[in-house]
Image (cartoon, rainbow, N blue to C red):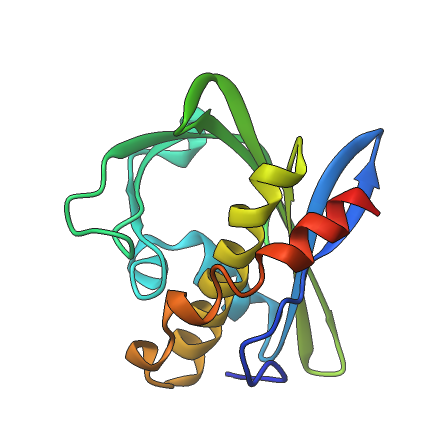
Length: 175
């Protein structure tokens, strides 16, 4: 699998979806859509770049551990609201900083001429949240690219993303 994403940069953009603010990111892969789908849905592929899950997705929820941040990452429940394999999955979970609010994510895949485009979107309510969420997703999606292309994940350092990209995402959400 190869991709066109090669260096750390702030790639997310602000987009309104049904009156709700989202940060939207894209990555492209020279790979079949099924391979990219596996990279974002199969636990043994996810663990290489972000974390792992356990449970039965057909129940509408799985347990997830974001082990890329820490080996002892706390368990989160991820609710799967929509799944149209291998094209779309939407999910939500309680916000780690405020369990009364939810985070919502959308992953869409499209393939054309041997290239699959991954579009990842997260709902963001304010520019303060965007300052950390934006750099975080650039970092994790770049880790995904590295994992899928055989590049060195250790070369991807979160300190190259945050706080360097925080202002970009503050401006994006306020635009």
